[in-house]
Image (cartoon, rainbow, N blue to C red; front, top):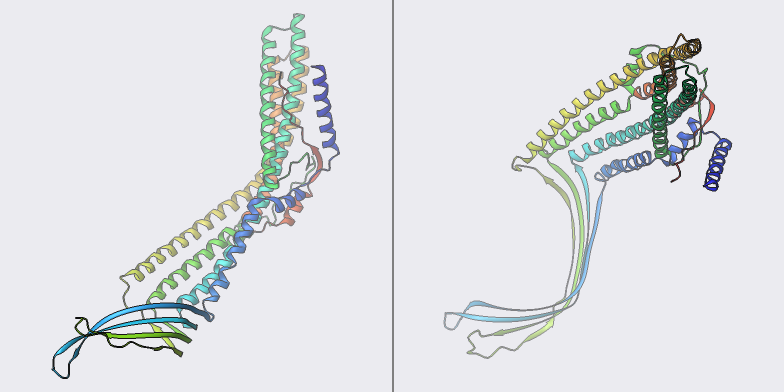
Length: 487
């Protein structure tokens, strides 16, 4: 058992040493890893590339279409038929039979057809629609890029917040552990009652559960970051205590709202979607219009064959006539050029139904645009107010940590002289732990609201992440969370 414990301790020490020597990864470096490894952004890029093919496909319909067809074969056929003929001598109709056998040694033909659109309203509208589809694809890809910036920031700060919470919980546990030891010693010499020991033990047990929960939260946050980047991290860079708390620039809520209505990528995509829906209406209406195509065709065929024909009396009264056999070859060429006009007259009401369907879908697209604009405005206002509120909250919680620390020291001093109870000390420690946890979380919430504000306004870029990254100057080593050995 001692050997196992020694090996485990060595493993933990090596892990911690390796973590300490590893270079700390900052926010920009983590983002660059996510750009390379995040499957969501790679999927968005593939979908964008696929959508870009809509325009050349629509343009191709307006260009000449050339098709070549050809075939070559050999064949054998036998046929028999009867017909009515007038007997000149008797003036009466008689039945005459014929047998024919054809042996085609070779037959081939080919044709070339060229078609050029002269007027097809739906194809011109499809080309215009394809341009909007490409623009939507670009907007969706840019939105995915901004979403990646937000997701990376959220996961990165989530790990740091969980690490700070664990550090505070562990510090609180150590403090409660010391207080429990002191309470047990005081009880042994009769200075305090058993209830004080029980209060200390309850606080210690609660803090132990808090540490376990904090470790679990840190593990989950680390996995969320690894899911995006595909890499585990041992050391990250966190903001220092003197992190600047800047206000949004410009310091005007309505300016940010106007910016979001103009540049928010979801709004842009919804606006383009409304244009696509309008094009779909015009495409459906083209079902009422005539189409005009220019076409030119050239064809050629040749047949090499031998045919045998025999006349016979179907009644069998007369012997068969002598068979006639000989070549039955042929060849031909054909040149055609002209205009083909198609005028739709009646399609069972299907065209009118498709027009009504697209009109309803266009109405739905307009309502979606309106809803997207309202959502963008709400998100922008919320993020703007969030930056201001979190700035004030960080400052208030920073002061709360100082006040809680001072209050704890005063309570401990009062406990030593008998003016404060164990419960008072435990409550003071809990308040300090909560203040430290909330303060750490508020700083990351402040940074995240900056990211969300720029994202909602549609102006978030990697350069903005670089600005935030400049606030991160303090490397921190994440604890190595090893499972307890069995037994």
